[in-house]
Image (cartoon, rainbow, N blue to C red; front, top):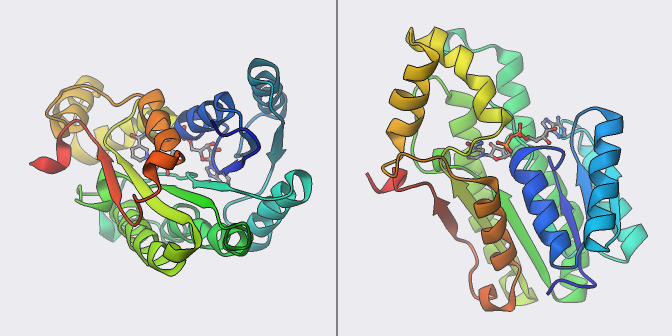
Length: 260
Ligand code: NAD
């Protein structure tokens, strides 16, 4: 159980991050939610976590493009709950384009949100974790932290970076009771995947059904999408005492994709 622990989960207004925040709250952790979206809907999500799981849930509007806002998100958790014990760096965006047409602005945004935001949150949270001699840092990487697909240069570069950041920080904090791991899902059915279908149709000249079956599920030998709850269950396990010797790893949950 994670009662008396506090978790900050970036990008938890939707998809995988929301499932992780809810799963950690179900185990008793207080949570700091973060992400973009409609204010009223976010407030409903926050209030539902408090009433369903009997924990405290806060919302930080930190924009993952902004180092100072990311630091303030961690400080909000520390001020309110006395410390941040679990940090899940999950916020991420995707953009699909041939490299020669890849908008420079999109490249910069993807590197900032998908990679640099994890660095900023980690550097803010690590001193408190070391002082309390316990911490769990979980980064949502991707199968694209291990292998590539065409037309996703920024995303693949950022996710390979997340895998490297994970290993490096794991070594630095290993004697302080803090573990650092990344989870690398294959295709999970979330808005992030749904929204890239039109651009993939355009980039590859395919129909929607062809993109789903011949591009997305083609990658996964199981021919099934991963679910957000499956990813969340792995995050909960990584927070357990049973996982205290798992650090610096990149845990695949990809229906066999990266075995090929
Ligand atoms: P999603 O679009 O459902 O959720 C992304 C979250 O990030 C949302 O809460 C969004 O508001 C937030 N976000 C985006 N830009 C932000 C910003 N500037 N500041 C703060 N928050 C911001 O997508 P998802 O599929 O749940 O993705 C979550 C993570 O999982 C991402 O890092 C993604 O790369 C990774 N991932 C997803 C899949 C997949 O198939 N869906 C596979 C592997 C890895």
